Length: 242
Image (cartoon, rainbow, N blue to C red; front, side, top):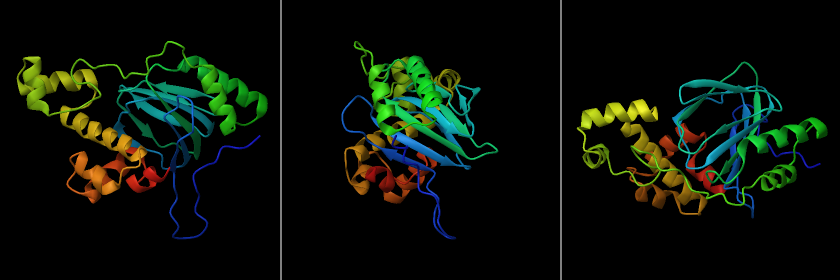
């Protein structure tokens, strides 16, 4: 069995530890795979345009998902639906896990996680081929692969609080209060995350980092880099190279 390739670990003082790495499998419906290895695995509140399925190989993965603490240990997994605000927390031990990012609703998430757990128990590990094959076995034949539209702001273009409030027939203040209550993040944070998700898609397509920064409304490449790394754990350049 070919083991999962894990993020690079430091070999000597001064070398950076790459906690996150991203990979794009050829074929199938998986948008990308992510590996996480390290102690400092905390990320601030963010969301993805894809479903996220996290499967833990070692340690405990801890998230706050829609305000609720959720945990998974070795051989267990979690499903974070597309568009759901969440943040990850550090734990006492080193975490090793893999994330699958898939079009919304295209895979039967609970059944897929259960199948991965059965394979992990039987084989004592999980290879890339095992992971992608098991995922395809749980692909829904009628899945739309579309991100659900949100009442107060979809996972698409975001043109600001004032315009959104006007479309909803609400005051800016009232809209902001309702938005935060229903979505778990204030409108400006949602707008930033939408731009970061747009950047993510452009980088996956191979667009240059500087062009992506300009196209998604960041002041410059450095500004995009700071925001992108804070949200996703890697620089735009490293993410693009995946």
